[in-house]
Length: 338
Image (tube, rainbow, N blue to C red; front, top):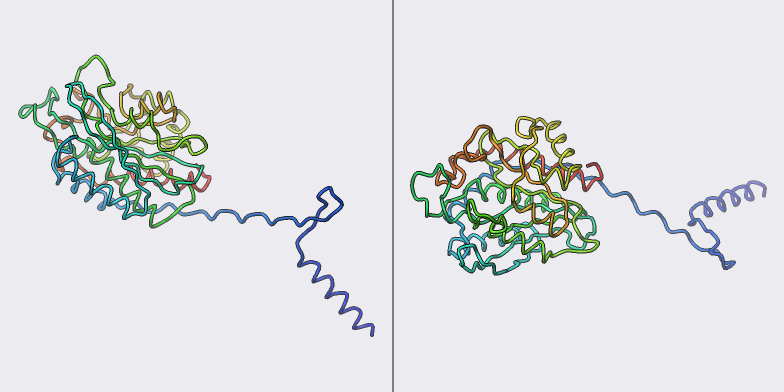
């Protein structure tokens, strides 16, 4: 009998240990305490496919100059939308009309690809997908009134973001990511008095963002001319003014990853790019990763706004450097490590 009593006592303790903990709810009744949610599993940073990104630049260039209101522009848009949908994004085609400085009415489309669209923690990644309608650089020797291919100026940033979209599908995270391709960025007046003739798509989006309130992105990163061989990314002035902490963390991360030859600590001058309007109108801190070579007449690559902005200037190693750093930022942010 004694052995039975001890066994019964031990069995009772074991059963009680398996019950959920109880506490008083203040009404004299016991309430069951809910179990804590399991910690979110961290997702390793995937490897950026540089050759895939290079092929994405080639595909855009194959359409020809992607100038707003042209058939090449429309065909490229259809391809971009299809790719993002193929990679599991929720896609919005944000159509808008804007009057160019020439008086032309531009029928533009901002392409928005969202991952985890209902998540409140979000980051924004962006580039412009149109190309310059004129080869009006002071270094242009021929065809100044003809549109350029824009392999780097437009195509490279889009290619990096497409590869990031592919990785987000293959290696999902719980954080929200919005990829926005701005249209009509490069239809501005060279040397004009108003910088607002440029970046028409980002100005429209900034006044009509697809997310707001609790879903407003924590910060944004803009890519512009990120594919040329030997690219040099300085800390652009407006980026450092509006998003200083993100700039410093991203550049430090890039240098720790071995990309210090691309991401240099030099302070760069202010550039009126899409990020300027996202910062000043949408009030989302956004930085600009943009190539600023030394000792050039224009301050950009010698191919800038010329017909030399073709596949010859694109280097897969530069695409990888930018893309791998961007993936590290996104996945570390999702893991709570950035």
